[in-house]
Image 1: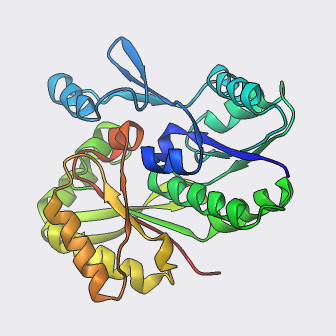
Image 2 (image 1 turned 180 degrees about the vertical axis):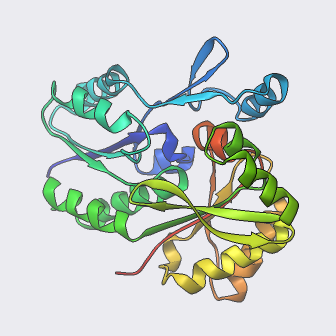
Image 3 (image 1 turned 90 degrees about the vertical axis):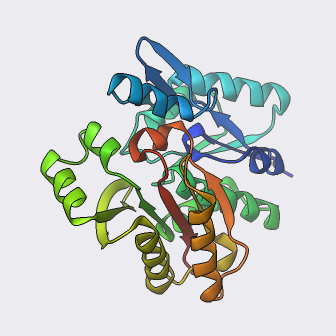
Length: 284
């Protein structure tokens, strides 16, 4: 029976438990603070906030390089020479990671590359769904697995609610006028994924707690989510109270025991501290 191994980038924000459970191999993306560049996942996300507070400059994020991919592929094939790799890539329109993997894959056989069209917790959802599909369908071919990823990515929904637009403004993703307007009117716009792009969506007004609760209500109203795929979480400094608000709102609607994700350095560099995210896969 063919052994399939999933690879993805660190920007998937997979937990250590999921990585171990499904034997997923993670390729590092990178974060530059000042003159130093670090592998994503090798440092505390709080360092990003401290760097911004001290310098007024956002860290720069970068995708994985061809060499990053080659190192991981070589390690896998050394241990599993007959394996086939399913690489589920971070949204190709947002970073060079997809192209880097494509370049590296030319030197190997049995690597199947597919764009997840997702980032962070959205990519987690796609990766975990694929790992479960492989477990439940052990005789599947690589083509069938890739077709599954291409289907499930189109049904994956991700809504991100920043607590502040400061980091998005600093990164040039929100204009100064939009930032000031949102601050004055107490608006909290959501960010959603469309065809792999992070785009501004519905704006909520009021306290962050109120906006979070309404965003969760709208999410489960607008999408017919498979309860087993529901994930909530966010960036560092998202309070336990905010997580509890989200969980209680879901419970009121009949959704219990969501999974949790903790956003890593890449998405945190854009979303800033205390941002909230909710992810799920719509029923087919």
